[in-house]
Amino acid sequence: MEESQWTVFRSLLAILQWWAFNVTVIVMNKWIFQKLDFKFPLSVSCVHFICSSIGAYLVIKVLKLKPLISVDPEDRWRRIFPMSFVFCINIVLGNVSLRYIPVSFMQTIKSFTPATTVFLQWLVWRKYFDWRIWASLVPIVGGILFTSMTELSFNIFGFCAALFGCLATSTKTILAESLLHGYKFDSINTVYYMAPFATLILGIPAMLLEGNGIIEWLNTHESVCSSLFIIFASGVLAFCLNFSIFYVIHSTTAVTFNVAGNLKVAVAVLVSWLIFRNPISGMNAVGCAITLAGCTFYGYVRHLLSQQPPGTPRTPRTPRNRAELLPLVSNEKLDDKV
Image (cartoon, rainbow, N blue to C red; front, top):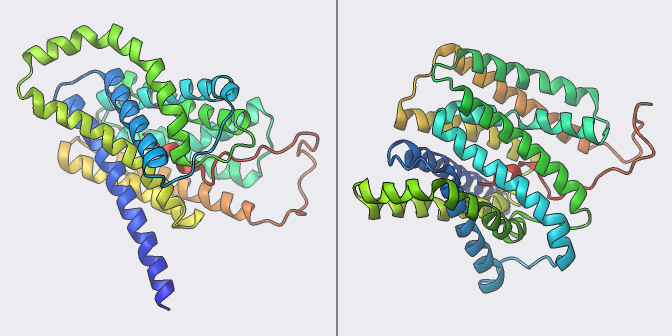
C-alpha cells in the first residue's frame, strides 16, 4: 500500500514540476519580449541552446545521471545535423510567435501538432492510420479554427509563425523516426547531441540580424544587469524543462502524461492571463477547450491502438510492404522541449 502511495506521489510531483518549468519558461519568454523590450527571438533561442548544451554535458559527462548513447561520428552530421536544423527552426518560430501573439493563443495553436504530424506521415511516408486517429483530429482542427476566428489579439505574422512551428515540430518527429532509426534516445541525450548543432546553426544569423539591435538595447535599456539575468535564467530553466520531461515520462503512464500535457496548456493560459491580462473572449475560451478535448481524445485513441496485440487484423489499405518506423523516444510529447 505504501509503495502504491509513493508511486502516486512521485507521479504527481513529476507532473507538478514539469508544469512549473514549462509555464515558467513560456511566461519568462513572453516577459522578455514584452516587458524587457528585448525583441530578439533568434538571440533568446541561441541563449537557450547554449544553456541546454552546457546542462546536458553536465548531466551526462560530469554528474553521470544519464548514460551517454553513443552515435557514430558520421551519423552526427548525416542524421543529427538535419534534425537539429529543423529543431532550431521549431524553437525560433515558437519564440517569434510569442513576440506577436498572447501565450494563450500560441499554446492553443501548438496543440495543432498531432494533426500536422499525422498528415505529414500519411502524405510523405504513406503511413496507415486507423480511422479513429483521423476522427480524433476533427475537434483539434475545428477548435483551432474557432479559436483563430474569435481571437481578440490576432496577429497574422504571429499566427503563421506558430502554425509553421507546428509543421517544424512534426517534421522533426518524422526525421527523428527515419534518420535515427535504431538509436533509442531519451530527452537528455537528444539535447546533448542537437543543442550544440542548433547553437552553431543559429549563432551567426543571430549576430548578423540582431547584433546591432542588441548593442543599441544594451546602451539604452535601464537595469541591463537584471534583464540579462532574466534572459540567461530563462535558458537555464529551458534546460530544466527538458530534464523534467524525461522524469515525468518515466513516472507516469502514457494516458496520464497526455491528460497532464493538455491540462498544462490550460494552466499556461490561466497564468499568462493573470500576468499579462491579454483579452480572452468567452467564445475564444470555448475554442481552446474544444482543442484540448480533441488532443486528449487523440492521446486516448493512440493508447488504445498501442494496446492491441501484435496479431490484430488490419484493414486492406495497410501498406504491408513497408516496415513500420520505430519510435525515437517513448512518448511523442517530447515535442515540448524548449
